[in-house]
Every structure is written in structure tokens, then in C-alpha cells.
Image 1 (cartoon, each protein chain N blue to C red):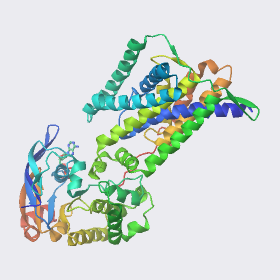
Image 2 (cartoon, rainbow over the protein chains, first blue to last red; image 1 turned 90 degrees about the horizontal axis):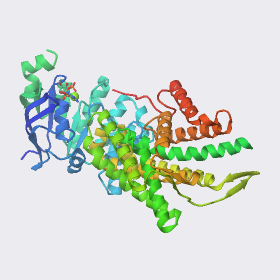
Image 3 (cartoon, chains in turn green, red; image 1 turned 180 degrees about the vertical axis):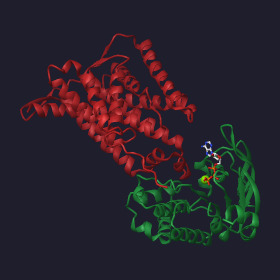
Length: 236
Length: 290
Ligand SMILES: Nc1ncnc2c1ncn2[C@@H]1O[C@H](COP(=O)(O)OP(=O)(O)OP(=O)(O)O)[C@@H](O)[C@H]1O
Ligand SMILES: [Mg+2]
């Protein structure tokens, strides 16, 4: 049984159809990439999975449980964390407060402190700056914070929306290294990326989204070799 | 010495305005709506004090009853009138709020008729202070509002719910992704705002005992303006804005020629302040980092 199963999702913004029958699965322990051009519907897909958007039809099943109509704040408690597009960290709060916000649904203070140490181990930079107001962090640091914040809910499944957006090549590498680290510690990852090259090279499997539909799928390596994909998303 | 007296009076009525402004600004920041009916919650608090004191004669019981009743009313109004409009255009929500405002005023008039009620909370006398005689209610209002503001600030800064309020006001979607129930936070916000309005009603009746169904209207609009001056959505901003308004008012009362036009002068100065700083004293321009 897949950890996450998305079936026939149709999502509208008013009368505009953004997703048109999207189906895919993510198995436990996998890294699955979702790639596609601007406006293809990648963010819409993730928002629907984590409950920020209600679909018109279709289902989202997690661990065998239908979560299609569950509100976002309940879905987090089931073990899905979402690193949103554009980071969306809480700018007025400090780094530490942002991280604690990630553990909002958890009660055990001792366990939260342990998670905090784990996050600091992944991101020493965040520890150095724990009392800094998050709005004053650099773009790269904000991305680290958004990922650290997601880890604080101790998720089984992390969905990430363009974590490499706007970062220098060096930082992009760093972000992908962290994604692999998280994966090694047992997290399952659903990754949306513009940077198809990098995403496909770390993904077990990938789906290609085009104007609201899945148009191809395969292992990361297969898609990297595919001529069509090369032309459309890998710059030749 | 007269300056000191004016200052104390200004800070005291500024404290009352701050109580009201906080309700506007918190609801605006978190529910993203202008709760036009907020001033009328003060009036409902006033009548609750009137009824409770009629039954028991005890002003503290009156205040407690007003806080309780206003909290329930504020939360019910939000659930019944505003919650169904989550996601509707701001104009639809504003018109609904105006409707709620007139509804509350009309119901109060039906129950209590239109002649003013006298609510003598307590004659606390004066305190002598550096040769000045300052009415005790001024001091009580000042001290209470300072305590309330400190407690509220600590609550927002250091409690789980308080920080969730900050998170929701900054980014509702991201807050939901943390596991925060936005509906619950909005309920808490309306409850706090309404409780503060009840306190404001109590302070206002201590100052002037005449109670009518429109007692909340003018202070409501003034405090809303104060919240805008302070930077709408900002809690410290509402405090500063309220106090600035109180000080302007106290100064204006002191100058005989302009005293009768105090309301107009207050709005004039507030408008001028806004021309200088359109985002308000502590308002921030939204910074976006990509
Ligand atoms: N709030 C909205 N209201 C109306 N239309 C929207 C809204 N959000 C997205 N859309 C539309 O839905 C479609 C899918 O958008 P989505 O943000 O999911 O794309 P995306 O694949 O994430 O693109 P990008 O790579 O640029 O982030 C686009 O055509 C977009 O214009
Ligand atoms: Mg997107």
C-alpha cells in the first residue's frame, strides 16, 4: 500500500481549472519528484494534498486513511509536513520561535527539545542565529529555517515546494544534500522542483505535470534520459 | 503643574482608547476584517453593568458580568455573522459588520428605551498628588489599562496561543500548516477584544455615568482611527495610537477656545499624522523576500 495515494484530483480556482485528473502515489521511504513548467499545477497539487485547498473531486489517501476533506491543521498531526513555496516563515518571530511553531501540535517538551537539537545538527547556522528575527535572515537561511520548521513536527512525509528557488548554485547543492540527509533519517519526500536536473537525479521516481495533467512518469534516471524531457525541462 | 494634570488625564483616557483600539487592531490583523460593530460591544457592556448593578449594587460584579457577557456576545457574533463570510469580499464583511452594529443598537433601544440611564459606578473621590487634586477614577483607569496592556503583551509574546495569533496574522496558510486552527485563533481574538471593550465601557461609565445605546459609536470610531494611526494590525501600535489620541483630547480640552471642537480637532490631527506616515506610527510596510 502506498503511503500517499492521490487519485483523480480536479481543482478549480473559481471557474479556472488548475488540476484535471491528477493521480500519483508515493511509497514509504521514497523520494518522488513532481516537475513541470510554471503554472503547470505543482503548487496546487501540494496545497490540495496538505489540505490548504479543497478539491472539486478526487481523493487523497494517506496511510489508508481518506484525508481529502480534512483541514490542513489536522493533516499535520498525521505526520505530513509542508515546506511551502517562497518559504513563508514567520518574519516577526525569532528563528527559535519559528522552529517551535513547527512543533505546535506536539505536547512533550522533552521530545520537542530533542527535535530542536536534531534540527540544529542539520542546520548549525540556525543555532547560531536562534534569537535573530526571522525576517532578517538571508534567503538561504530562510530556506533552511522553513525546512527545519517542517522537521519540528516529526513528519513521516515531507512535501517541499521549490526549495532551491532563488538560491545560488552553491546553496542549491546544499539544499539537495539536506534533502538526501532527511531521506536517510527515514523521511519520505515529495519534491516539487523547477530544477528538474537536480530533482530527477535524486528522485526514485518522478511525475511530469503539464497544464494540470500528469503527462509522463518513470524512475528519475529514465526521465533524465528521455529526449522529450530533456528538450522540455533540461535545456536540450 | 497643570501640564502634569493634563498629562495624567490624557494618559488615562488614552488608556481607555487603547483598550478599544486593541480590539479593532487584533481582529483586523488576525481575521483580516474591520469589525465595525466593535464599539457597540462597549455599549452592551455598559448595559450589562447597569443591569448587574441594579440587581447587586456591586460595580466589580458589574464589570465581571460585562466581561463575561461581551466575550460570549463577541464570539457568537463572529460565529453567526462573520464566519460564514470567510473568503467573501471585504466589502460584504464590512456591510455585515455595519448591520450587526445597528442591530445591537436597536435591540438595546428596544429593551432599555432611548432615555439615558445613569450608572453611578462609585464615588471614589480625589487623590492629592503634588498639590493637584486628581479624580480617583482617572488613576484607576490609568493603572488598570497599563496592567491590561502589559498582560496582553506578555500573553501574545510568550504563550503558545499568543504566538499562534502572531503566526495567523502574518500568514494564515503557513499557520495552518503548523497545525494551528485558524478558526480557534479567531475565536480567541474576538473573545479578548470583547473583554477589553467591556473594560473600556466600565472606564467610560466611571468617567461619565450617562448610558445610551450609542455610547460606543463615537469612542469606537475614534479608537479605530487611533488603531490606524498606530499602524493597523499592530498591538503596540494600537496602544501608542490610543494614548496619542487621549493626550490630544486632554490638551484640546485645556484650551478654552478650541475645547468645544475637540472631536473635530482630534480627527484633524489624526488625519495629518496619517498624511505624514501613511502606514501609521508602528505600521510596517510589507517586506517580501523571494
Ligand atoms: N489563487 C489563485 N487564483 C487563481 N488562479 C490560480 C491561483 N493560484 C494558482 N492559479 C492558477 O492555477 C494554475 C496552477 O498554478 P500553480 O501555482 O499550481 O502552478 P505551479 O506549477 O506551482 O507554477 P510555478 O512553477 O510557477 O510555481 C496556474 O495557471 C495559475 O495561474
Ligand atoms: Mg508553484
